[in-house]
Amino acid sequence: FGVAVVITNQVVAQVDGSAIFAGPQIKPIGGNIIAHASTT
Image 1 (spheres, rainbow, N blue to C red):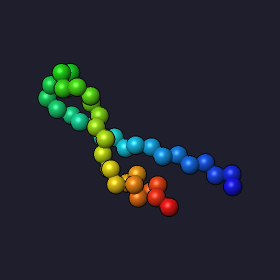
Image 2: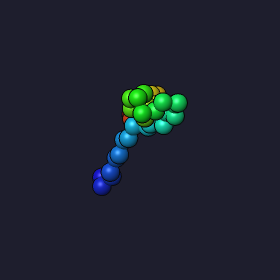
Image 3: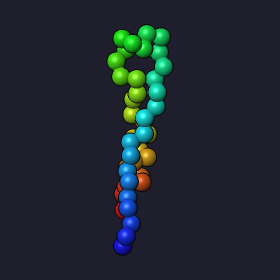
């Protein structure tokens, strides 16, 4: 068919007071967006 499909995960920045010691700066969001977009 000549069609390319790209599925990505969405992330959002988490800005807190002590960001250096808080761990990862991004967290996954939108769990249902991928589910609805990838089902056939």
